[in-house]
Image (cartoon, rainbow, N blue to C red; front, top):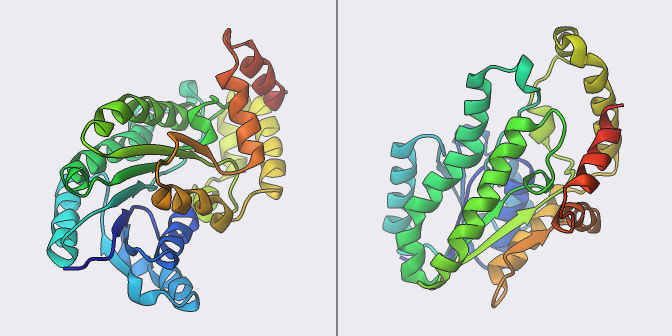
Length: 281
């Protein structure tokens, strides 16, 4: 049991999740840093040690697509820490492709991790968050506000998460739980590298969509050249953890704010359509 506030963070083996776990620990929280394979915790534990907060980081196994894993993890958190004050839904997986060339299984897999995993962990955590009057913070993406070429399944999942959380927020508030979504833009992390794409093979299989994909890849590589660091993208997560009343929607950079503003002010959809059309030609 502990009087220190406890946060459970999913997807912490690298990138934003790793940085958020270290940042939360630096802010005085006990960070329960979860991942599908705890054997991949070496980078996290080194970062926590380097930051002087290894004693406040606990690595646990959690697969957001496995109900038994979710239950086991939360049971262990409550048994060992006696409380859960915040949940950070960060685990996710990219999916690049277009629907004519993708299988429905590809789409379902993207939804399972990026949407249903978020729903499942949030549902399981809510009784504990009600008890602590805590908060749910979910990492979505600028792709949860602006649909992007060759990211149909990924953006569909992120749009779904934003709709889910926006709908949940006023209901959760009636029982003392704050809800926030955090929208990063390009982040220099292993998220894209973990796709493991064979781009020549993918282009060869794209048929009539190959020129558009080639243009999209070139534009994306250029955008990632100026990407935020994971620590920069994680900073607003830590701020949302500690704020007296966090906002519902937070972007992680000025670029992300400007980009998301395109869709929030775009009543007829033409601004987004005209913008993203330039990415594929």
